[in-house]
Image (cartoon, rainbow, N blue to C red; front, side, top):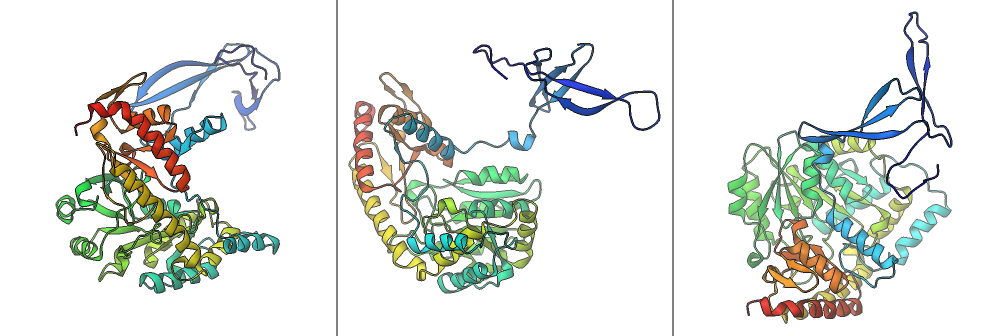
Length: 481
C-alpha cells in the first residue's frame, strides 16, 4: 500500500463478504470474512466523530462498503483502567535521550536506573553454557527447583528469613513480582500506602490493580524517610498494602532497624495491612548503613511479601529475573496469576541467577567492586553539587541515585528557553542547554527535586557536572544566596 501524499489520511481496500447463514432462514448474515484488496481505493476508513462516554474519549471509525449503501462503526476506545495509567517518565526520558544519541547529539544519559557494568563473567558464562547444553525449554512456572533452593539459602544466610521453595516465585524481573503481588492481594477500593518520593511504577500498578494509591510525603530534612506518626494517622480499614523500598529509588535513603521496628509496631495493629518490602538495591549500600529485611522483624514474616531480583546488584537488567518470597497462601496466588500471564522466567536467565547467588555472601568480590565504584561516584557528586548555590540534598546511603532539591531555581527565566517553573521544565532545560538527561522529581512524587543516576563512569559524571554548572550559571542571579 503506497502513500500518495504526506497527509495523515490513509486509504485501505476493504470488502465485507456477505454469505447466507448455515442455518435455516431467509436473512443473510455477515460471515466476518475480510479481504484487503491490493491497490484498491474504493473503500476507506474515516474518523467521523469523537464523543464522551463515561468521561472517556471514544473514537468511532466508520467502515463503508463498496456500494456505500451500508456502514458499521468500529469502537477503538481503550479501557478506563488503561486510560487511568500514566506512562513511565523514566522510560520516556531514557528513550528520548537514546534517540538523540542515535541522531548524533552528544547527550549524557543519567536517567535510567541501570548499572553501567557488564554482567560478571561467571554469571554470563553460566547463561552461555545453559544455551550450549540445551537448557532452553520451559521451566516450572514458579522457577526451577535449583534456583528457588538457592534463593531460600540466600534469604536465610543474608537476610535472616526462612522460606521453603514453594514460598518462592521467580518472575521476569522484580517489576512483575510487585505487580502480581498487588493483583493478588488488592480488591477494588483497597488502599496502597506509598511513601513519597517513590519509584514511578508503584502508584500506577496500584491503579491497574483497581486499588487507590495513598501517597505519604516525606522530608529532605528527614532523609526522605517515612514518619511513623504520619503513617499511623493515615491507616484505615481500607489500607491493604504498605510499600517500603530500602535502599530507596529515587532517594538512596536506607531505613534503620529502629525506624522499621517503629513502623512494624504500627502495622501490627491493623489485621488487613500487608507490607511489600522492595529490596532490589539491598547489596548497593554504603557503610555504616546496613540492610534490614522487614520480614525478619518480630511478627512481620506472616504479613510481608519480600521482593528482590538480580538486575541492580549483579548488573543483569537485560536478563529479566526477579522473585517474591512470602507466606505460601500469597505466593500461590501470585503463581496462579503468572501461569496465565507470562508463565515462567527464561530458563537461561535462571541458570545465570544460580551462578549469581553462588558468588558468595552479598555477591562476593564482583558486587563489592561495583559498590566501591558507586560510592566513589556518589562522593564526587555530593561534593560537586554541595558547592552549587541553591541546591539542597540528602546524602544517599544506598542505591545509585542522587535526589537533589533544585526548587530555588523555579520561577527563573532562561534566555531562549522560557520560564522554569517546575522539575519537568528544569530537566527539559538541562537536556536542551546542557545535553544531560535527568528525571524530574514530579515523576517520583516530589516536584522540588530531580533525580541523577550515577550508574555511569566517573569521567562521564565529571563532564555532566560541568555541563549542568554551565547551564545553571545564567540562572544563578535569580537564586537567593
